[in-house]
Length: 109
Image (cartoon, rainbow, N blue to C red; front, side, top):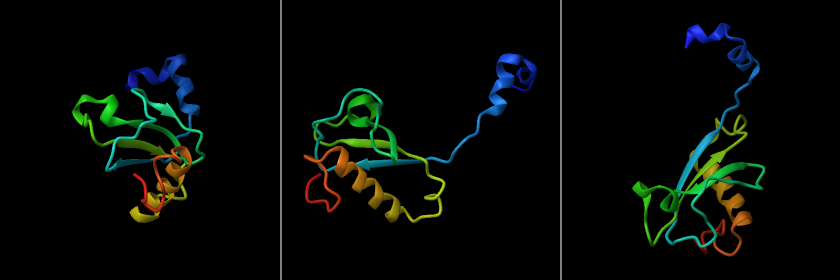
């Protein structure tokens, strides 16, 4: 709120700089085995955090399929790219994170 801008605690927020991110949601044709009921930080330089929403959120629950929701960041150079370019880059990174279950060429999940 505008009234809070002069409070010293909140005044520090003015120094924060936002960066663009892209949210990617992908349904897979099977249940991924190496996901957990949490938001997970990724070791990927492109996909900062992710969650299998079919596990973490009852509205997306599915016993046979996984739906990963990923934060694609930093995304400044990707914002102007096509959806297919973003999905291709995402799938390549997911193949590294889940080598036994996902492949960029879609021969796995």
